[in-house]
Image (cartoon, rainbow, N blue to C red):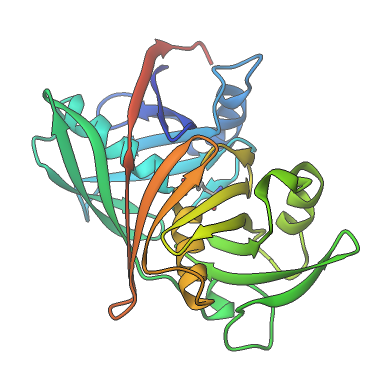
Length: 280
Ligand SMILES: N[C@H](CCC[C@H](N)C(=O)O)C(=O)O
């Protein structure tokens, strides 16, 4: 199987062009995702992303975490899909529409020397209704709600960016035992589909630091949907302006929350690392 390794702020995936002759038998995809993601016995990645034809948009992004679970949306991943389809001449459009399991997203591609260098994505509407995140709660919205994790109380703000997020504000992102509490958040009973958890340190009203424990992938160097969810949570809690630089372990993303229209825009890099072929 031919693949291209790409990364957005260090959130790296194996990309497979399934728009022509290559395809993976659907029941086998979770196994392939686990196999190629293994950083010792495989290629090494946070997961697998298949670029497929679409009836509703220019292309379809089918994304899998490194545990083989299927993700409904991936912010860093969709920027790299935009780069792939332009750089490999699958399209000559500078604005492309990508179908995801969480709807169609519009990407604006920035071209430098004939290749995509950065992408702005209209990430759509953050969703706050608990049953749509999903999170089990009798509240209308979960803003700064207490939760006990590992015997300690944290406050969470929950929303969906097409995938579920719990945003936690901390004093210092360097001090959190993420390997211990990450899985406890991810698998907490109030999240029936599990959850992506972002740990946020507010630097100032236009800058935050973020670490993330991703559902199905563990700690990653960046999470695009998580960065969007975090800025929305910051605005809801009155902690930042609506345009914020998010500094992640793997790089920076620029997020703008258009609160009046309830739309989030993400701008960030997309990088091709290498191409290869793997015997499955
Ligand atoms: N782990 C996520 C999918 C990947 C999201 C992240 N890598 C991003 O850039 O948004 C989930 O299962 O919902």
